Image 1 (cartoon, rainbow, N blue to C red):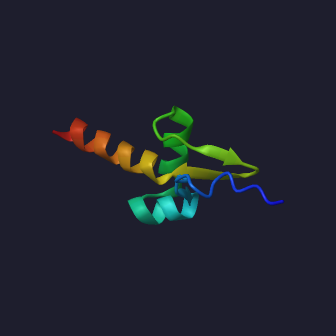
Image 2 (tube, rainbow, N blue to C red):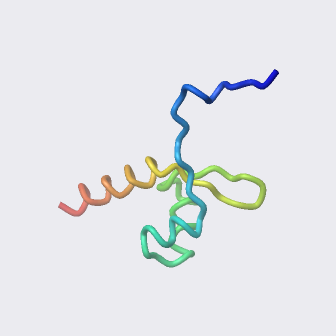
Image 3 (cartoon, rainbow, N blue to C red):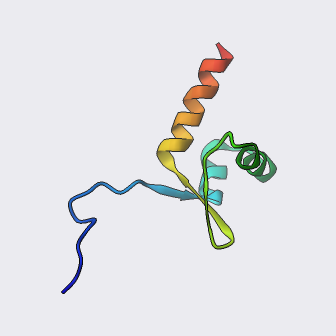
Length: 68
């Protein structure tokens, strides 16, 4: 019997550090600084970081609001 818990639910889309770097067009140090300051939510999986795309987009929206 196979468990199909996620079959009817929407799973969040996760991005790797490289994908976030490409998406935001920033330096790797910028991403790690944002993580360590707690500005950009991320989850550590082993030795790698993962980011919910919705969190990255929300962070971008907050930055735009601060720039106004």
